[in-house]
Figure 1 (spheres, rainbow, N blue to C red):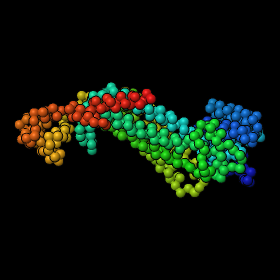
Figure 2: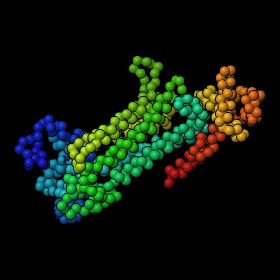
Figure 3: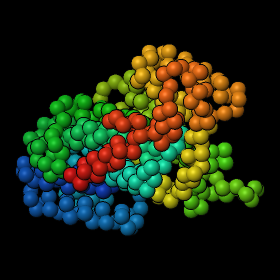
Figure 4: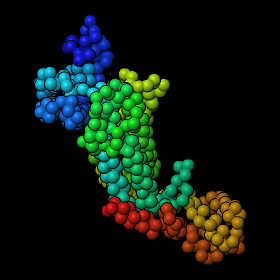
Length: 459
Ligand code: ARG
């Protein structure tokens, strides 16, 4: 048992069990750099408003920097009895500087300190996640460009629906990731607000210069209500919500890679370097990376639920319950970064079987809509056209034939609106090219979108 900074009021030491139960240092130690960064700004501010002298601030800053080096190089061992990273660093500072170390916490509480640390930490992590998102977006564009005109079936209800370009399909994920990136940017605005000065909950009686601290730490502004400053975890929940949506997107990509690499589809083959084998079945090559990405999505959703539930109905202001925000938060960040990191090279290295993709567009009457559109453009109401083509399809199914093989006479048996140009309509390439509308799958449009993306990326 070590003596606690708050031991003045207590007659008995903390029970060993409580010490372990209460301690968050095993996980909040990852905040040490941000904790020190915040303390340095606080110390400089204390000198600025003359609560401590300049010389004292310099010594405190020096002490904090050497503690940072000690922790980074594992020379300062963090143990559970230190309770949390904030107290561990403060205790070490007092060990180093004596009474002067005890001045650092003037006008500050761990409640506003931890809020500051998490904001500083998340700001950095979000930037990293955004970089990884950009890398994956770049990979999607690269793979789309390498396979610009590869035609595949597009699906609805997982039934072959209409022919599309693989590049168009890949760029759908580009759009999703773009929104994820944007959401993170939005969330950053609410994270980038400086809570220090709230004290335990009510503000502090010291003439602290909150704006100075905000400027030192590159925050855009300071918080407006001390109670809210120490009890707000919206930004954590928001980030977890964004992470959940991001993982949902990745899980859909995972699912497609899993399906496409199955023998039933055979559209792609994952590189050996991004697949694993079976310990019993020698022939197996499994898409474990994609499966894990899909699976980890559940864990991230769980983390969101965990913090939401922890925060539910908590009275203002700080409650120790809130220490429970950290593990789900950290786990989410690690999980999201881990997935984004491995997905870019997994996509980059997969092999695409374009013949197999094209072949899959052959069966299944994928151009039936185009035939209906053909009739509608000749003046038939779309509903009638739809009905007629339905009958053509039934006719073909019964005879085991495809739309491409029908003679003009056969077509005209269904409607006199059919002419010999119908042969130009019943090809998958024509079907793709016909979707020449903004956002459509026509090669021209996909190329244009890629040019736009590349232009945006340059700016
Ligand atoms: N370890 C605590 C947390 O993460 C820091 C704040 C503790 N404040 C307090 N008054 N016990 O929430």
